Length: 137
Image 1 (cartoon, rainbow, N blue to C red):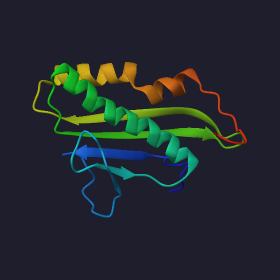
Image 2 (cartoon, helix red, strand yellow):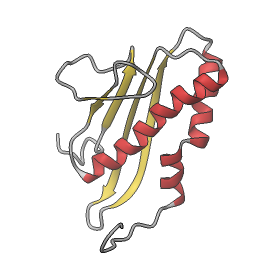
Image 3 (tube, helix red, strand yellow):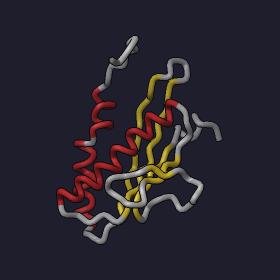
């Protein structure tokens, strides 16, 4: 399947919802001692979707702690399309799975809060200017 056909899909997982394969890269993570598994191809489109998925995963842990909801694991899938003539994004979709012993209503409150406050999705929704400069010093 081509990248475009799969929507430049990415998946990040932590805790009990980490990818089961030991061949999947793992990145350090402040909320979980085992780190986050990252299933992603290295293209710009995938990395954009990874930024959204990673931000959502982090914020689930942060908001769950603030709301007193126990989280054993989180998995976030993100994907989206691009106009292949201009490479403008046609939008990004993400889905969140949370493994928690707490009530589903409590978990839904966490996920709803994250959808409102997650920084990367908010930035993408608002549109962010990007410009090249000669130096960042």
